[in-house]
Length: 258
Image (tube, rainbow, N blue to C red; front, side, top):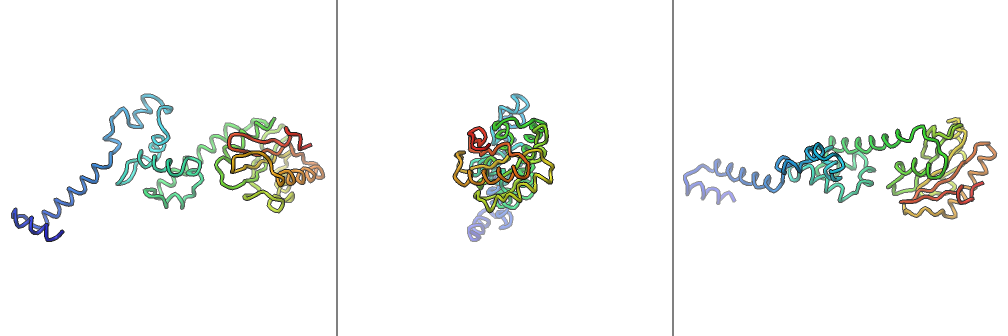
């Protein structure tokens, strides 16, 4: 390559340095031309302008995430980067990635990783705030409350909802993570939490990552064991609800919890 530059420089009476700089600029410009910048997109199709003109509903998931990230990197713009992230991970998995895991993704540094985590955490808190003060009257209420917290988890999460005398959630707490069994969900851990929060009653909740909400024999055994302990301690278990992909199973509604 260097010999070719020298020959070219000699032929046209130019310095090797000038030829080298010209080639570098040419390669850089060609590289940039392959990456469509957001400002090069038709104005009506830019995310900000679309949001202003047509409202947030008009934006795709890629465009919404691009507005949060604001910039891409040298080989792709923010929209292309957002499309790659959502296409590769999906929103559920993306929302579960830790700060360090996000930074291992091409083009995602510390700042962008923080932006992504803040986005999903803010959304989670917003969902929770909308439910605050709403009493738990049935299994559907439990499902609506727990779904945003447990959706997309690739492991079983066993959670307790602590209720006050008006059946409102005082606090939700994850007791165990992993395949549900009697050793992971011990009555001591479940009711220690309930006593600490001065709960009037509790609701047991756990997810099935498979998406099938039907209970297993272990689910039934754990439920019966905790229910008997609750009766001894005079802390009522209102229900045990299993969260599936698009459905739920209620031990109370199935009359398996009395």
